[in-house]
Image (cartoon, rainbow, N blue to C red; front, side):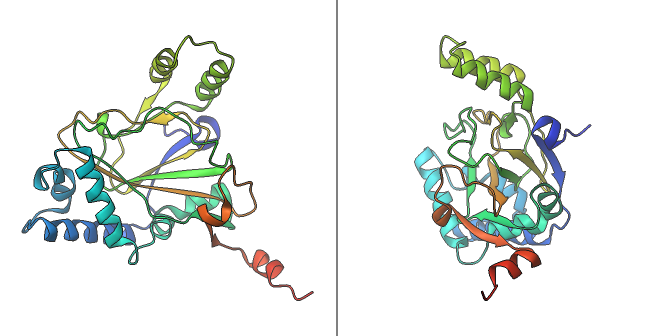
Length: 251
């Protein structure tokens, strides 16, 4: 059974409208195909095997490619809008109609055997504790190519014990957290949504495929912003009719 946000702090959801996400994926693969002269390649083949086609030897080369790809996409696509179009029903149910979204597009890329994996952590703080993360793979993710999450009650317990200095060192804490972690198999057209207080991360990618995913954050417009400056980190994304009326009053 798919866990719920309320009981587990995370949930895997299916897209309610995939067209805009398909357009983004198609554009990325066309950009990469043109850059590396890959003729008639399947989009999943391009993304999964770009480390071979681009001859990515170092993490710096991989990072440069991601930055170049983001620059190409920056004035053409709004990731927050695309993810909302794809998974908005669940986002609205959880956060309501008045929304902040992060300002900047973000791609997370990990080639095989790369050191660019996400160390075990929780996002709040500095992120708002009223924030929702939507992690959207552009390729099918499994095993060490995917993502792990420590369930809600286990995250609470581990963080409480860590703050109370119940662990002798970081490695002991990390080992206990990984024992509790759920490792996900998530396909393209699905997303993992989770609360920012969850312990999560990724491992060294031991598969022979590269991982591409979007990472977008939303919060209710009127909820606290955590330690982030709301004017630089967020933008007003959606407003309800009542909020529009309240903000437009003439007295």
